[in-house]
Length: 110
Length: 113
Image (cartoon, rainbow over all chains, first blue to last red; front, side, top):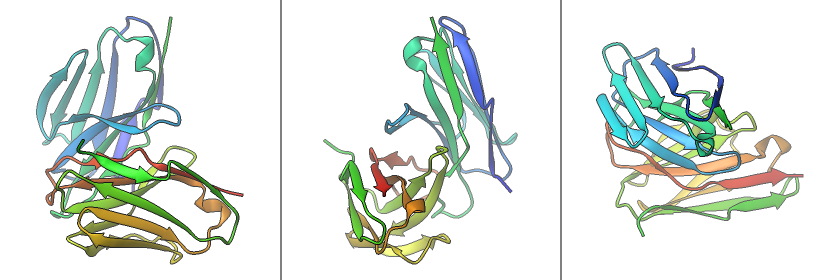
């Protein structure tokens, strides 16, 4: 079964609103990352957050390993935040690779 | 500049041709990966290499083969491309360990006509 579940699938916000993106894992994880991608664009690492809370500007990521979940909070959204946000986990062996969720497509409108 | 570098950015080819994509990382990592991103933006691992040894080989078609000369380079060769191979191929690298950050290149977009 799918190891990484992201929600919502898509989200439309008015500029200035906040967003909460969720990621749930079906197996235990060693680390996780959040990525951002624009259509046709590169995969940009937003957060490497194995556990706890990290903040960078308007973005905050919280990972709770015991509950197998991570969230990405975007405050005061801007049009330039539009794109796809992907979470990915690494678990199991030391040579484990990233397992990606299907992504949340965020659209911020004026 | 330290990063993951991929070439070419784009490639258009005909069915049955052979293609090769290059990837180099200057981050001093010892593990490299190839991922495939399909038209629905789903990302799936294809291969990973650790210290020149293939350690993960998912159920990809045999026409795909990774090639590594050293731990900083991992190329991807496709012997005879098929239409379903059209996708974005992403190279990545990390240090060994499940608790290390993974860095991605900008990808190579392959279109098979």
